[in-house]
Length: 252
Image 1 (cartoon, helix red, strand yellow):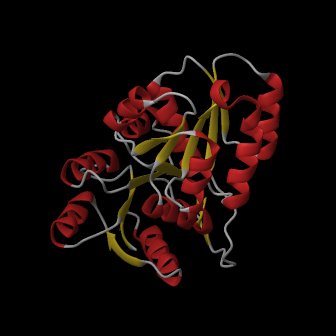
Image 2: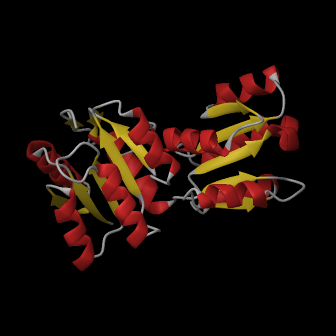
Image 3: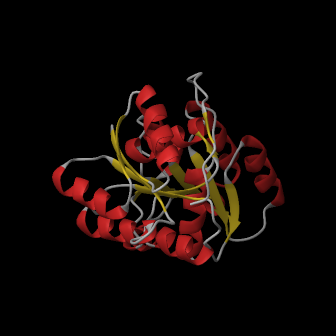
């Protein structure tokens, strides 16, 4: 896995590069967006991790340029500021996730690994197609695919082809808690988001207790679902390696 990290704070950039190299990643650092774009012109990368607040071209502008030139490359943003409008714009345009500074290096490694290995949202629908929802997400820069029922969902989880699952309680009904339990027993890093057309307190409580990332009510605007997917992808989760170095990020 080859990662390009962009940050104008040299101490944080060097810390991230060193820690990720210790984890076995190939890492190249860039001090600003223009240097990053020059590297991208001449070298191949699997993923870009960039700070948002930088002199000259900021991280969101860099993300947009990368998206236009490398539409399938995951881009993760990081920031120590609550630049809500700027962050929201990037998320709605397909940024994979936003990491708030300071963050733990183990957390960052998990999110980076997730982005490179399985950047696909799985839409579970048992009886009829979900093409409209899938088309809407794709138009907003989110890679996704549809599947039918529990068997296909679990197969995708075992094959590590999806990192977020969106399941409709109205379709799966009482089978939803068992599906959530099985998914998370196979891979606890998967984010399971459940959606229902009306409040179903018992089912919501069961899936939440099992570890679902979110329980949502319809109607749900596509933009809100995209925001929730990005938050789910940025959340910490337990990872097996024992190396837990910390990174105290400076404000971006």
